[in-house]
Length: 254
Image (cartoon, rainbow, N blue to C red):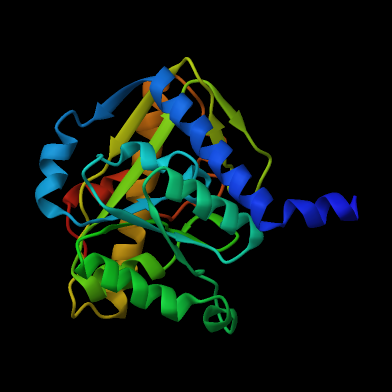
């Protein structure tokens, strides 16, 4: 077992795994009949590019389906061994990986959070959209301040995105992740853009954070509704006083 584990961590094994994942995802994309909501989402979001595409962590296998071929994109990927495989898979589907983590506290610098933030700002300034998870690390469906800070510093809007297929393999993981299966139906749902002013104070940042959280919950609920499925991770993290999807309909936060 130790030998197999060591072999799985070799560069050759990681390259092969990433390539096979990318090939499989292309098969899923080709063999599912996807609907886009709203139907004019690209017409509405296109003029705002580059945007910050927000997702819940469990969407990391599927989210690139919503990217237009002409849009250059970069995605924040952790520095872990699993992250290396994800970065390779992203490369094969035309998404550049920025390595780092949204870790909290003293781990933030160690895990590349500061350098990753700088790299994402440079990418947005250069015309690349950023794709990133909004969750606080290891706390599913709880939006952190990192994505809001990126929007504040860059001036680019956050767009909540969800991609769901009717046939999927769900994993028993903290983030309720899944991967789509071929030959089904799919839904891509884009929320209203959320802007954060560059002079937003702590109170405004918190409002924006809640709006992103609500927006992601709303697009997920709608995507699952469109494919007739159930979101196993929905509202498990919610308390009675937390925000609802209505907060995301303003289009602007802070």
